[in-house]
Image (tube, rainbow, N blue to C red):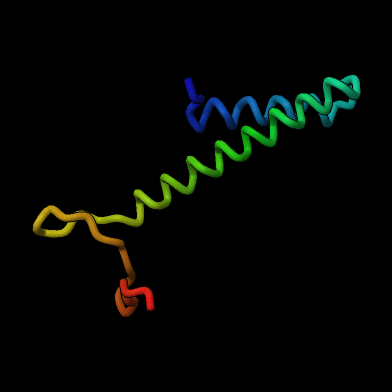
Length: 77
């Protein structure tokens, strides 16, 4: 099961503190670094997904459309 954003972020913070402490053997540090990078990727994907969802609004006829500020265009040319 994939971790949610908050759990991933908490685990990432824990790993960072352990690595900053400097009391981690080299092999363990490499494993923790690899885990941390996977957590960063997971968090970034979840943030991008959340951003995409927030940038959608429900129109009056119940259709989703991209959100734009007044004066901006939805068209991509």
